[in-house]
Length: 376
Ligand SMILES: *Cc1c(COP(=O)(O)O)cnc(C)c1O
Image (tube, rainbow, N blue to C red; front, side, top):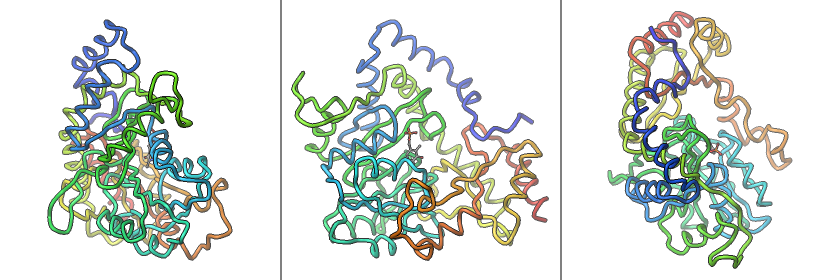
């Protein structure tokens, strides 16, 4: 059996080496390192793939979120509601822009932002909601868009973990995650579902005017050379990273299929066990692209299981071990522990298993056998 990796970037690279190398060599041969043809090609290909009117490439997923918020012209003191159970980047940029983060609890089944909690948190100062499509599955966008419309709020999707997921509406139609809200951000960090070989990110929107604003914000607030109309940032996707992404974007659906197949094999072996809750998929099979495959270990020794797996050479991880409202940087006296019953429970129960495009059946069986052996 091949050694099990949490994320197997090397194995994936071996299978696409020729295309990626050719793509990178092309950048080296043309010396178009910044804003070159590879970047424009990637932008157009991603617009087509997502069916998004505008993709604005930038330097990373955290910048993408920040730029999206800058483009909406939110003002210090505006309240922005986001999930308590996520990676810190989301709340970090809200705080950096001197907006007021309002963390709310998540749903127990999908781990995504709770609709009831959003509703409860809306005040006259609320200006935006940032749903995070956690672990590869879109949040309940239908309910979020309805709330946003009723209260005149922006919706900024943090789509760093769910690129390629198809959100299913109540009427059965589907839209790609990231083109539902007013604007969305994504990350091409190497381990993401569509990863480059360094840092990268992008912003998506269907709004022409906002797209124009954002293209200036990413480029020093410049709309005409050396005319700086707004305070901007410097955030670029470089051509070498775009070349890698051009080689990988045509494979994204195949990669997501491989993740879904691995998830299905995990769940087939583990579902129904009294101490295990396998991931819940709210729509169809293609609604969840499994950036992570995350179990809940209930009424059992989650940390002991983790150690047991590590001892057997099976990497695994806790995403995320500490709720954001308990982090030193984001504590606030407005929060009560009773506001976050689900997140406080999840941080004690979640365990993410190896998930990538190169997992094989033998490896997955080895992992599920080891879990069942420990839990008996
Ligand atoms: C990875 C990630 C980000 C940040 O992306 P970077 O490219 O690392 O800056 C933001 N939000 C979520 C939910 C992420 O998983």
